[in-house]
Length: 257
Image (cartoon, rainbow, N blue to C red; front, side, top):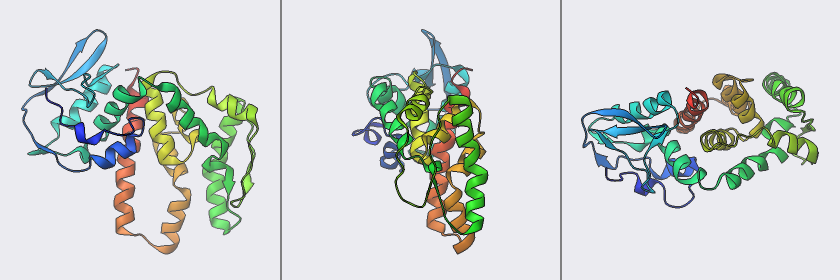
């Protein structure tokens, strides 16, 4: 199966968002009729007219769980006359995981861990009162989760002044990062979108639902839209990010199914 995603994924393989931006345009006419999933050597590969799909690094596009592979295959089956990578966030993320994260998990974990020193949920507004209440509502449960479930006690700050976090808290939270490439790649995507490794860890552990994690990640943005009105271009970018976020949440939910 020829590689039609080659242009998507040439520079930084551990950044699914950048890969997605490069691939957000139709690049080929649909050349297949039947999409399926085949099992081999304990993994489940996407098949187009019975032939395996290859990643940009020429590896098979295959997932460790059937339901996850079926979700990836569904993106291919949903394509119309042209194959549009912008409508295939799960495939893009899978390519990033298979070609990038699997070979270098430690740099990916390091990239996630960097957020633990200045996580979104640590920095609270000093006004207006409505925003303070929203941050408290959505972020305090994440901080409490880190304290009670991870043994990580972080310091909260008001405003934009940097607050150095205890090394033991960072180490305790980092210990919760998964070792397998699929979860790690999905966590990297969620962390990048949310600006918060703790939100990503809470999602991984089931302490937050995908919708709750999304809301926690966008408290400030939602407040701004409610206060100043909605911008159509911003809403389009938000919808694109939500698709990336949902793809990562799908991986976390289905990787064991």
